[in-house]
Image 1: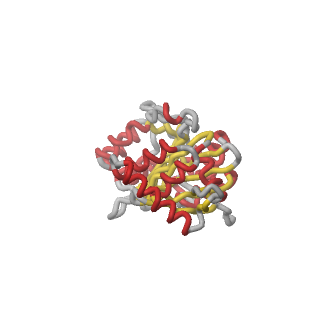
Image 2 (image 1 turned 180 degrees about the vertical axis):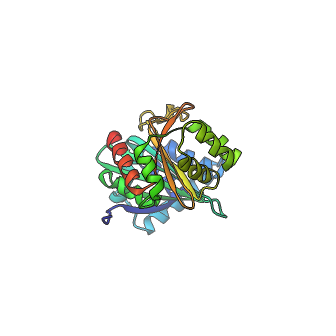
Image 3 (image 1 turned 60 degrees about the vertical axis):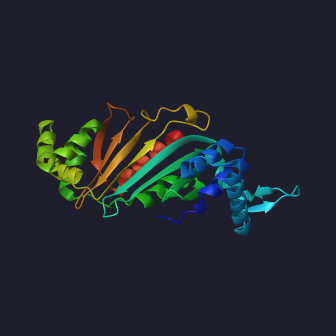
Length: 279
C-alpha cells in the first residue's frame, strides 16, 4: 500500500469542547463536557475553557485575533470542517478478545468537499482525529483493520463457488450455544461442513471482530437519527486460523448477510464500493 497523506491530531475533551464553541457548535461542546464531568457550574466551565485555550495556543493550534479573542489555526479549522458539515457517517468498531478486552470505536465523517475526518476516543479522554482525502479513506481503514492477505485454500475454494447467507440476529445464539451446536445449526441451513466447522469455531472463540456500518445520517439529520436502523455495511470476524466478512444491505432485526473470506482484497472491494456510494 502507498503512503497516505492522512494527518493525525490528538485533543483532550476540554480542547474538543472549546474548538466546537469556536466553530459555532456550542451545544456539541457542552454535550462533550457533560458526558465527561456531568453538570458543571458556569465558573468551572469557564476555567476549563481558559485552560484549554492556553493549551491550544501553546501547541500552535490557535492564535490571538486582532480583537483579542482566541481564533483557531486554519489547519485545525479545516480538520473540524467535516465534523461540523458532513454528508454521511461510517462507524467502525474493533473488538480484540485479549486479556484487556480492547474495544475501539471510530466515527468517520464524510465531508462535502472531498475530505473526511475521523474521531477515535481513547480512554474516554483523548480524541484522536484523522483527516484526509476521501479517495484515501478505503486504504486508510484497511490498514487499521488488519485483514489477512489470503484465506485458507479449502475455505476459499468453497466460498468462491457457493453463496452462503447468514442471519445476523442468530449470531448471539450461535455464540452462546458453543461450537458443536453452532456447527450443527449451520449445517442444518445448508452450509458445507468445512465452512460450518471453521465458522462455528471462530464465532465461539474469536480473536478479533468488529463492524463497518454506514449510518445514513448527515449533519442536518443526525439529531433525529434512529440508530437501530442504519445503512449497508459488514461484520468481520477473525479466528486463530481463518477470518470472515459478512456483508449486509442494511442494519435491522432482519439483516441477512452474505459470507465472504475475510481477506484484505475482499474488504477493499466492499469498502471502496460503500464509500463511493456515500461520498
